[in-house]
Amino acid sequence: MNDFLIPTETAVITCEMQRGTIGDLAFVPGLPEAAAAVGIVEHGARLVRGARAAGVRVLHATVGIRADRAGITVNNRMMAFSTREPLGMLDGSPPAELIPELGPEPEDLVVHRIHGLTPFTGTELDPLLRNLGVRTIVPIGVSVNEALLGLCLVAADLGYRIVLPVDGVAGVPEEYAAQVLEHTLSWVATLTDVDTVLAAWPT
Image: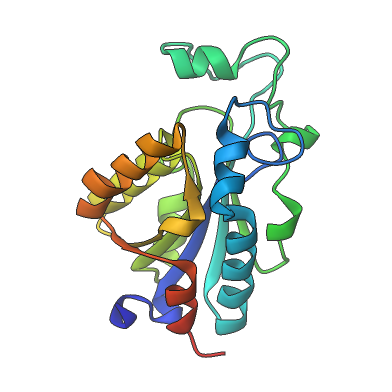
């Protein structure tokens, strides 16, 4: 696995690790509790610190919704939930902020979107990774139900290698998230943990 984690060819991507998803302003039922049970904020903070120290680029994929809902089509239950009143993830509001333990630091890149369910679609994420020379991504965050799952599936389609720390992701219910990791994500990613990833990077 170390061959996949060459620092100059690897990027850590945090997925929707925001105050309104798993932080102090979270409003998604059950998700902050599932994230806390795994300890993804603590593990994620260690991962991004170690990545930066090793020269591995850190990107943060975040989401927020405009107050006027411009650019959004409510075509599924998830979008209906996300755009309900009162608006939970208003673009530019405190819930849309990154979990402070993760940064962002000046060298990090933030890839923000105002529509859609996953981080690659309609954003600069893919061209930024390619311009940085990235071949392997290390995604962490939420959720295994939707955005994190979509990130991994699209990344595999785009040709990236995926090293996925299972102690850095969460979904609901927790038993379901474990099943998705075992029966779906294990087929497109190398499952590991944060300590193993960090051990691959000299500091």
